[in-house]
Every structure is written in structure tokens, then in C-alpha cells.
Image (tube, rainbow, N blue to C red; front, side):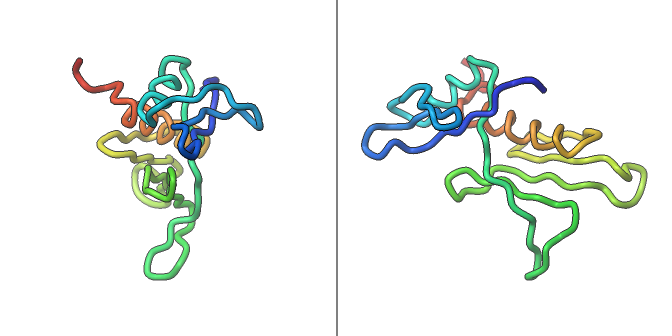
Length: 123
């Protein structure tokens, strides 16, 4: 899990930027090109995380990820049954089960990065 976690942001009328802390790493014409650069570097996008809210209530051990205010994935801790204590993650058609919350965040951010870059599509 040692990959870089970098921010991708819109560079108003100049395309998309990859940012590391306060430093602009590189600017690209398209969002897909910026995400492909992350894949090429072995990095992942830094998504925005918040508590999952269902019927107006926050769900314990359950978090949703967003990129530019759009749903990107979800993680949740299993509290009952045979998977108790495991963290499950979902992003598009990708999913997994891991031991820690940090591993689940990594799974969502890596899967979302690869999805936007089209890295798993046949070429």
C-alpha cells in the first residue's frame, strides 16, 4: 500500500492538474489523461470521504467516497456474520474484503483511479 495518494483537480480552462500537497505535479488536457498518469506512476487519486447517511442517519463504520461531488465508492465494516471485523469496499464493478479501513480506502481509490483511466479496458 505504499503508492502515492495525489489530488486531481480541475484547472479552470486549462484542463486537469495533479497536485501533491501544494505543488502542481503536472497539467493535462483531459481528466482521463491525468488519471492515466496516476496509473503510470503507481499512484491513486485522493478521494473525498464522508459518513454514509441512510434515511437521515449516519451509518456506523460506513463511508462513501466522492470525486468532484460524484459517487466514487464505499467502504463498510462487517459487524455480524462470518465476515465480522472485515472491511468491504466497492467501486463500480470492483470490490474486495480486507482487514483494515486503510486497506479498504486504498482499494476504492485504486479501483476508481484505474476505472477513470480506462486501465482495465481491452486495448
